[in-house]
Length: 400
Image (tube, rainbow, N blue to C red):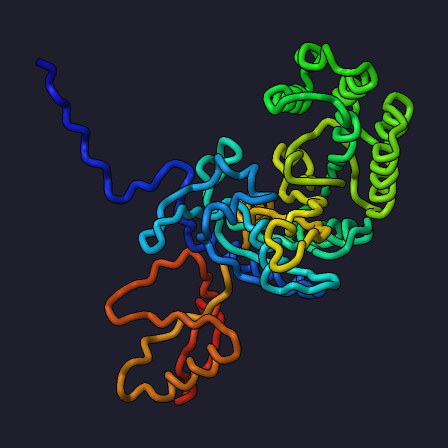
C-alpha cells in the first residue's frame, strides 16, 4: 500500500511565479512615469478611458483579442454563469469603447493605463502583471495617423529618459501579399510563420515546397531582409510587384524619413502581432536591449465586431507599453527631498502644526518623528529639519 506524503505547508508570504510586490522607490518611479505618459498623451489630444479589468470572455477574445486566448485567465461569473476573462491586453477594450459606447463618426483618440494579467510572462524575467499604457486612434485610414501614433510613442519614451532609441519596422501587408491566393490550412500557415520568425530557411523551404514559385521565393527572401534602409532597396528588387506589397514598402520609406534623429531598421519577416496588425507595425528599443519597450501599428477593422445597429469597421492604429518594463530601462530616481520635523500632536504645539501644514500645502514632504521611535525611510532623504528658534519655526539644513 502506497504511503501518502503530505506536501509541506506553503509560506503565507510567497507570491506566484512572475508576480511581485512593487516596493517604495520603484513604485514612486512607476507612478511618476504613469502620470508623465498620460500627460504626454493629453498634449496630443488623447482622452483617458478606464476599461474594466474583467469582461465577458467572448468580448475580450474577439477580433484583436483572439491572439491573447492562451494568455487570458478565465473564470465563471457567479451571478450570470457566463465565462469571464481577466484582460491580458487593453487594446480590444478601447476598440469596443470606440465602436459601441462612443459611436463617433470622426477621429477619436483614446489613452488608457492600468494593470493587465497574463497566464505566462512574455519573456523569462518579465512580470505576468504588466501595467499597460497605450494610445489608440480610431477613424483615420491614412498613414498620417500611423505617424502620429509613432511620434507619440517616441515622445513618451524620450520623456521617460530612454536614450538612443532604435526603431524596428515591418508591415503585415508584405507577408499577406506573398500568401495571397495560396491555399494553405491553419497548421501549415502557423508553421510558415514560425519558420519566418526563427529565420529558419530550411524549415521554410520544407513548409512552402508546394507553394507557387513567386510566393515560395518571396517568402524565402524575407528571411534575409532585415537591417538598415538598404533592406527596402533589396526588397523592391527580389519581391513580386504586387501593388499591396509596393504600397507597404513605400510607406516604410516614408515613415523612416519622417522620424529624424532616430535609428531605424527593418525586419520584413517579423510576424509578432501578425494576426493583430493589418499594416505598418513598429517596435521601439533602447540601445542594446533585446526586448522592445513599446510596440504598435495599424489594426483596421477590429471595432466592426462591436458595432451596434450598424457596422463599425473603423480604421485604427496605436501602441502600448509596460511601465514596469520601462522603469527598468531608465535610471532610478534619487530619493525625494524631505523635511524632518518634531512630533506635532501635543496640545501646546499649535505653532508647529501650522508650520507643518503650510509646508505640506506648498508641496513639501514633512516627516514627523513619532515619540520614542526612529524612522527608517528609503524613499525620502531628509535634507532639512524644522527647528524652533526664538519662538519661530524655521527650516535649517540637517546637521547645522
